[in-house]
Length: 304
Image (tube, rainbow, N blue to C red; front, side, top):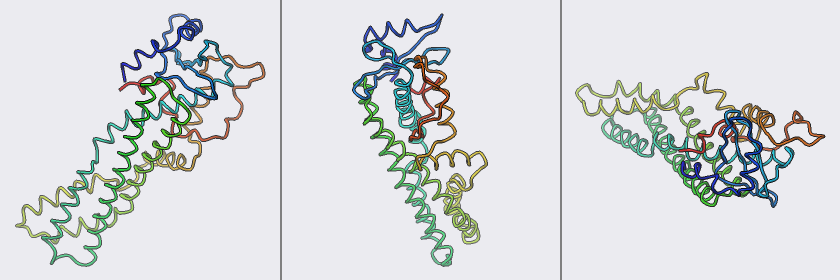
C-alpha cells in the first residue's frame, strides 16, 4: 500500500501533474490519491495539498472543472478512503480480537461445566447457561459475516489500487460491504447486551454450585467469568453517540460527522466556483454516511 501511495504520481498523466503544480502555493507539497475516478464518462484525478489540506480535482486532459462538477468526485473519493480505513486499516484490529476461537473456547467451557454439575443445575440455571451458549454461537456467526465483508472488500480495494481506477460500481460494492461489517458488529454487541442479565445470573449461581475441592472446575469458571466480563455488558456514556450514529447510518441518514465533513470539503476545495455558485447552499439529500472519516486531512488512511 505504501508503495502504491508513493508511486501514484508516476501513474498520473504529465498534463495533470503540470496543472497540479500550477495550483500549488508557496512551499506546499501535494500527493495524489492512489487511483483515478471514472464518473459520467470522464476520468478525474484528486490531489491534496499540504499543510493546507486543500483539495483539487483535475480532469484527465489537465483541465480544472468548476466546483459544482468536482464536488461529486471529492465525495466519491472520500468514500473510497473510508472503505480503505474500515476494511483494511481498522479491520486489522477487528481480526485480532474476539476471534471465533474465543467463542469456541466459551462453548467448550460451558459444556464441561454443565457436564460436571449436571445434578446441581436447576431448570432456571440451565436456561441461563443455554442463553450463554446461544449468544456465543451467534458471535461466531456474526464474526464470519465480518470476515467475509473484510475479505471481499479487500479484493475490491486491491483491484482499485492495482488498476489505479475506481468506478461508481466499485464504490457501491465497498459501501455495501462496509454496511455488512458495521451491521455484524452492531448485532454482536446488541446480542451481548440482551444476554447480560442471564449470563450474570448464571455466573452468580455457579459460585454456589461448584464444590470447593473441584480446582479444575474453579479454573474453568474463572476463565468463563473473564470472558463474561469482557463482553459488552452495558452501554457506557461514551458509547451512546457512536451507537446512535451507526443506527442512523443503517437507516441511510446523515450523521453529524458526515455533515461536518461535507461543509469542510466545500471550504477546502481549490476548484474554482462557477459565477452563480453558492458553496453554503443546502447539502443534497443523498446517502453519504459512513465515509466521512478518512479523507480530508488524513493521508494515513491510504497507508498501511
